[in-house]
Length: 170
Ligand SMILES: [Fe+2]
Ligand SMILES: [Fe+2]
Image 1 (cartoon, helix red, strand yellow):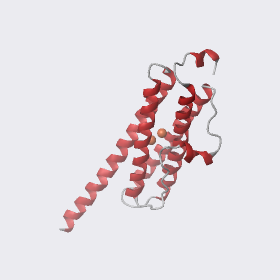
Image 2 (cartoon, protein in one colour):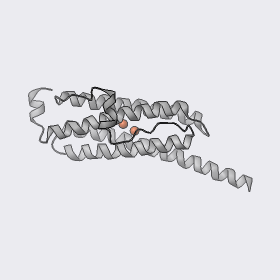
Image 3 (cartoon, helix red, strand yellow):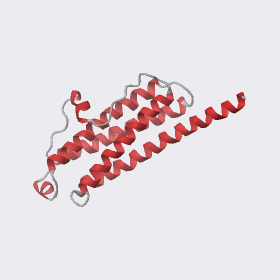
């Protein structure tokens, strides 16, 4: 980024770059978790939810694009090796070893809550000090909140379906 663009930032740049690199690693891990989980998933509503999870995956990848662009603008070095993703990431990568739809959704839900915390922290840290990063963090935060809501809604629908089936059996 141009010199002036970096000078106007009124905060600890090294700390911000660390947070952004953590976010970048988290986005890639979230992307793969969604992308693979959507394909392995089994159970009720699978055909409806699969394309939605693939859409979430694409949106996580778009977040990675926004974050890496900002890291480079700030003169930082993005995480260079996928080996480092789990070291940088605070969100756990949860392998979709059990393909049951509810297990996959719960794994992704934990990931979204972790992402919400991350972007909330970046938004707080940059508030009033780095408008560009702040705006980016809020944009991504809004999408992570939508993702969390989507998943909670699907879990509720699945619960309701199970309860309705139990009533029929009784
Ligand atoms: Fe994301
Ligand atoms: Fe998300």
